[in-house]
Image 1 (cartoon, rainbow, N blue to C red):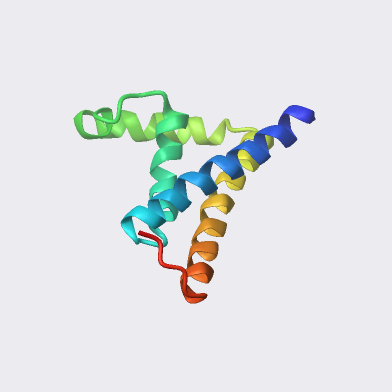
Image 2: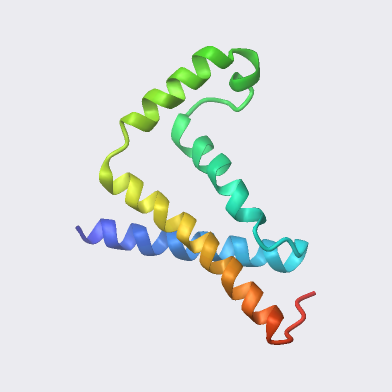
Length: 103
């Protein structure tokens, strides 16, 4: 149970930080929110990304199988990372609205 709480907090903080830095550098507030599903697919599937272009039928069926075998704890951890990216976008937007210019 402790590992679950630490993992949730860790994913939230890591993806909040990555999204915040990308938002500052690229000035694209919701970029990481759109990239997050791609990153998660790369984490979950365990296949090279080129497999989706070379053998898409097999690659997508394996991805579907992997997604169905995720546990509730895994889903909760991954959702916390996505929430971190969303909160980062909201914070950046509030900071810009308050007059802070980042890079």
